[in-house]
Length: 99
Image (tube, rainbow, N blue to C red; front, side, top):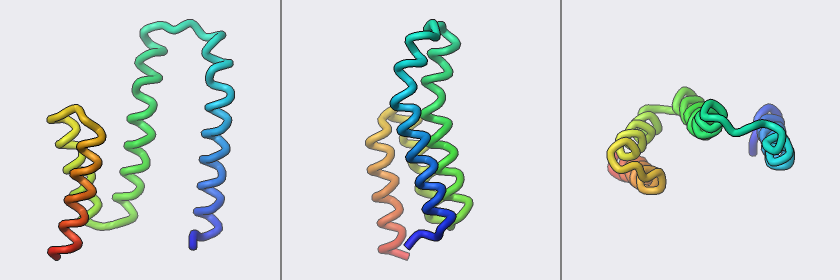
């Protein structure tokens, strides 16, 4: 069961996500799509995922850090996020099973 802090954080993230989904298309009708805006939007997803992964690694152990590093290496090599996530999860599961 998550703590009150975790539940609050999840609730706030859910609300912000909903707000972004609703307000995003409205705001994007007003803002002209320039190269800088496109780069910002493309980088935003990576920044959010990186923040989530870094927080998780900071709170957990070496297995999680190794899985994130493995996912990053696979992503760089193959440019496939799905493959990177699947192989990183398999690597973490193998670590748990073997060690």
